[in-house]
Image (tube, rainbow, N blue to C red):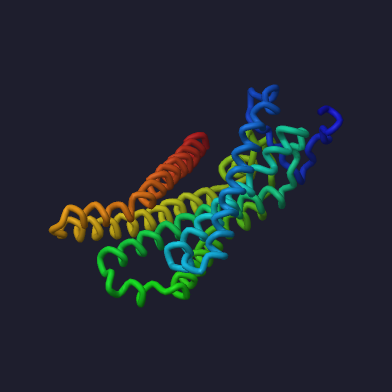
Amino acid sequence: MSAFNLTPSGPSTFILNGIPGLEAAHIWISIPFSIIYIISLLGNFMILFLVSKEQTLHKPMFLLLCMLVLTHIGGSTCVVPKALCIFWFSFKDITVDGCLTQMFFFNMIAAMHSAVLVIMAFDRYVAICDPLRYTTILTNARIAKLGLVGLTRAVFVVLPEPLLLRRLPFCANHVIPHTYCEHMAVVKSCGETTVSRMYSLVIALVVIGLDLTLIGLSYGLIIRTVLRLSSKKSHKKALNTCTAHICVMLTTKEKGRNYKAELLYHTYSDQAGA
């Protein structure tokens, strides 16, 4: 593998260290990474293929599922191919522009994923709380418009992050102890980053907080409606339609909580150090 090693990073590049302390096991670690990535791609593309070919699946619920699948494909593709290059060939160098581009797409896709979950919660709210008007309120065209709004929001809230970082000098350690360009690791390589750090913190709190509030409101109204139903069979049927989305929502909530905690930790530790 030494034949593939690149020259030391210059001032316009970062070095992605992979998994620190486990460099000798990178080849073995790459095996589950690559298997899971391939299985994920095959499964997600199969869903897209089936929904596109089967006319009976051309409904808002499955259109939302396709949006969620696209965020899964995009998020993993932003990270895994570069990680495998690190594991297999020790291609650790990445340009500053490449690093910021990866960071932008990864965070933008995460914001889009959150927006899709909000739309899915609204979809379930209408389906359970106002079922007679479901087909008139949530048409395929309206779902597509909501998805476009979510994508536009994701682009505009995330785009300032790399733009702010691009204007700063990268004067500190250029080694990033990750397999991808994680935001706070890149920030630590910059000069004065107070504005960038505070912007990222506020955006994470506002976007994630707003989305979780809307999802919680939707499910609060759903639970209230379900409890008013007289039939236990109706209770079970209504809740079964939401089970899968609740599981996805809880997973996303945990990721969002970890991201906010990480931003808070780095922000205040850096300020204390100053």
